[in-house]
Length: 172
Image 1: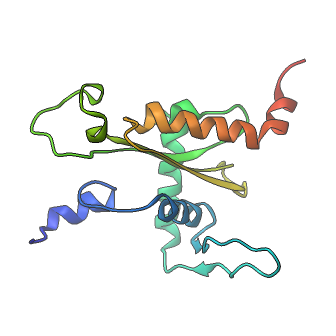
Image 2: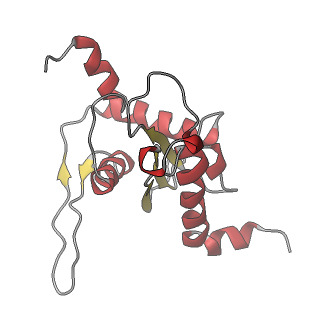
Image 3: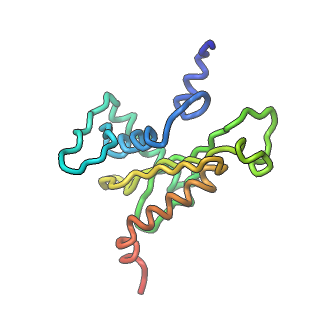
């Protein structure tokens, strides 16, 4: 089918006819977190992991995306539920429409197999000058909204990963 110029803009922000897997999203968010290096997912038992590959990404553009992902969680964005004291998380929520709808329909009123999917792709720590240590992608099939369903799952994972650091910050 024909491709229209306006579709390029939509796809560039994750809208429209875009198909990705959770693993592809993890590679994407990791590359943003680590400064533009593609890390190949792998399992290593006795050997070396494949080296990261530098991507041809403009450093200024990459920084704009990082700041935007940080704002999604730390300003008034859709990922605010993931905020943690003393640990900056950067991320992107998404809700993936499963079936085309002519009018807005409440997700809960749709048959289960037609309900939207929920996404949250993220990394932490994400404060300026900090080196990110973990990237998390949550995909909940037919879960509904990313901010309401997938993001809280990611928050629980971050709380587990950073438990010692969070415990040190809590008052006795």
